[in-house]
Length: 220
Ligand code: DX5
Ligand code: ZN
Image (cartoon, rainbow, N blue to C red; front, top):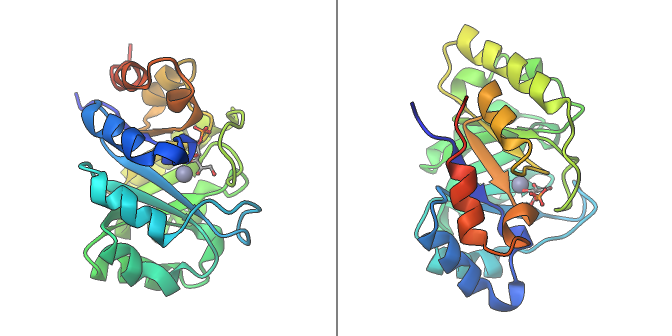
């Protein structure tokens, strides 16, 4: 049985001491560093950009899972590859020519992810699921950390798993937003492959242990 991957979201890290938090993730049982890029247009919030990602990239020892919450992401695909992104996720809702965007990500040697907002049905991915490496199912409306998990996510995972099986796709299912110790077991049971967790990890007393606990979640 493969264990669930954990991707702590650095959005909830201490930006006054980012190196320390990146190193904590390095030393933890986390699998990826999840990095949220927001432009203030696709989502209301602005997070951080290239100079900060450069610093993260310099210190991180695990794959960088970069989640772009920006309009017209095609403009920056090359830049994110140069900054060391290994998985680059764009939003379905932000891409008019999603197939072309996905190919461009893969042409730069990265794995291609597609994120869907809570209102977006999984079946819109039907004709692209074969081409992508990861589907990021947003379990909150993107833009902020610390929001409450949307319960309908379980049903979306079920439908997505069915679609992946039907199309014989290898895409991983990543869940992003409001993940914690209460919903993690059910998410894994439903078929989540990767759990993103921001506030739950970084606001806990012992983030490294919290990551270890999430990583140990198994289907009962
Ligand atoms: C939300 C971001 C998430 C966020 C998750 O727009 O995509 O990655 O950092 O944070 P929590 O785990 O606090 O909901
Ligand atoms: Zn994210």
